[in-house]
Length: 214
Ligand code: AP5
Ligand code: MG
View 1 (spheres, helix red, strand yellow):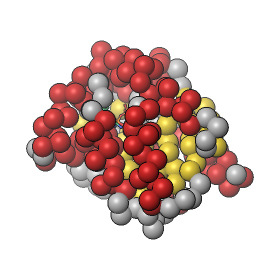
View 2: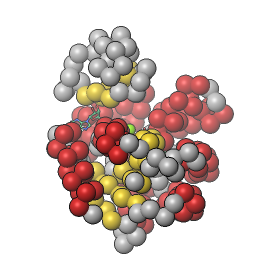
View 3: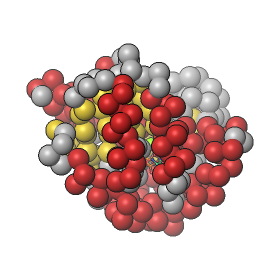
View 4: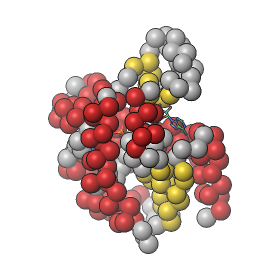
């Protein structure tokens, strides 16, 4: 199954993509996670991306095109969930021949929605496990001593771009550059829209039943 999960920063793409990946036994490909790993490892891409990510701007399409081609190169057999890509119309155009080469399976496009105020609240209270990437919301669980996913101790950190000023910029960048991607896909693929303000479990259920029905 080939899935694109789409929506503004903090709407819950990563949270839902991880659950979906387990359900469909597919690969969760988060371009944000790949870039953060590159920054951590000090690779060429990481060095170019760091300041851009910290300010909430977009990493250039040429870099992202190479990165996604590499990430998808071994996902043909497993299926995948793309989280955070494509983020510009140019990236959507770059993606087409890459997917065509992989297979001609139907693409499912899941769009999550939430108002900016909810997003700011969620992102300022997000913490991420620096060992395994597990995501929590401090408002829903405030035990930060041990990661419930990998048992690492004191591993939860705040992402640098989860500062309120940067979040506001990320929302603007999303409106200006990424919302038009939705129009690009309208009429080309089936778009499943889900209210991202419901509970994690309800959203997950809604996505799964929509996928079964199509
Ligand atoms: P990326 O890592 O993709 O960040 P993003 O799109 O801004 O989205 P987030 O990861 O912040 O949020 P999310 O939707 O995954 O929400 P989450 O599940 O964590 O990109 C980071 C940067 O990398 C970009 O700004 C850019 O610089 C660069 N980049 C990446 N891809 C790029 C590309 N293609 N082109 C160019 N540049 C690129 O949830 C958020 C919080 O809410 C968590 O605390 C979670 O626990 C909580 N939560 C989730 N669901 C619920 C719920 N239903 N109810 C209550 N709380 C919830
Ligand atoms: Mg994410």
